Amino acid sequence: MARDGFSGVAITYRNTPPDATLAAIKAAGAAASAERVDFLDDPARVEKSLDALVRQHGPFDTLVHAVGPLVVKRFARTTLEEYAETFDGNVRSAILAARATLPAMRDAKFGRVVFFGMLGSEQTRPFRSFSLYQSAKSALVAFARCLALEEAAHGITINVVSPGDIREKTLARRQAYERSANNPRGRPGSFEDVADAVRFFVAAERDFITGAVIEVGGGLQTAAE
Image 1 (cartoon, rainbow, N blue to C red):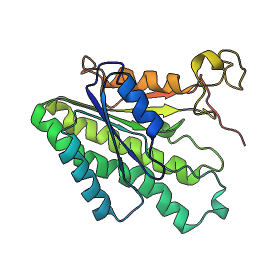
Image 2 (image 1 turned 90 degrees about the vertical axis):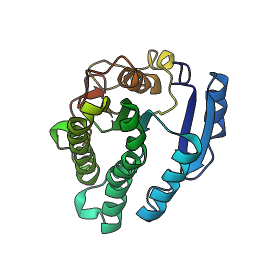
Image 3 (image 1 turned 90 degrees about the horizontal axis):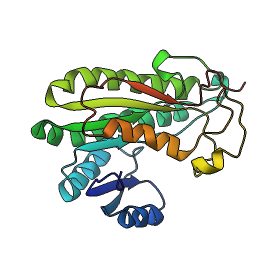
Image 4 (image 1 turned 120 degrees about the vertical axis):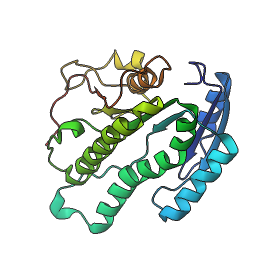
């Protein structure tokens, strides 16, 4: 996003300060800042942290919501704590982030919001061991699509990127071309493949696409047993 001309990028983190990411943003020519926000914390505390971030570094015209713990476990082995963590981390966090950033976008009559789903979340496609995670991501897609209808008149687009089985989060595309994977495309996905979908949605000229879902999974339609 910094390389695409954004003047400033603010990011949140939960545990370790993202020094390397901040350095990369600055090297690309944008101002960079990071604030610790634990989206599993008490919602009032999260809301306060987000409001402070917006006041200090905003207003923002773009929100990329890439928050959400992943639980891969058969339902019989899950706990209520894991249920709360999955839904608070994926759905409640999106609601709180939207509440914090949308008012300025409405005032500006311009905004771009991108949420992250998962493979098949827009169709509630079932996978074993994903009962909590897939249901949370499907709820997030429903939220995004309803929000897209409500915010369209304000010049705000709301879309979803749904990555497939991208196991190596730091794998570059040039490295991915040299490897094989069990999907129709035949190679693993890379962070650049996901980033390209985000860049597509947040572009200023992309004002007629809203409520859409892009799957970034190399044509994969099923998950491992």
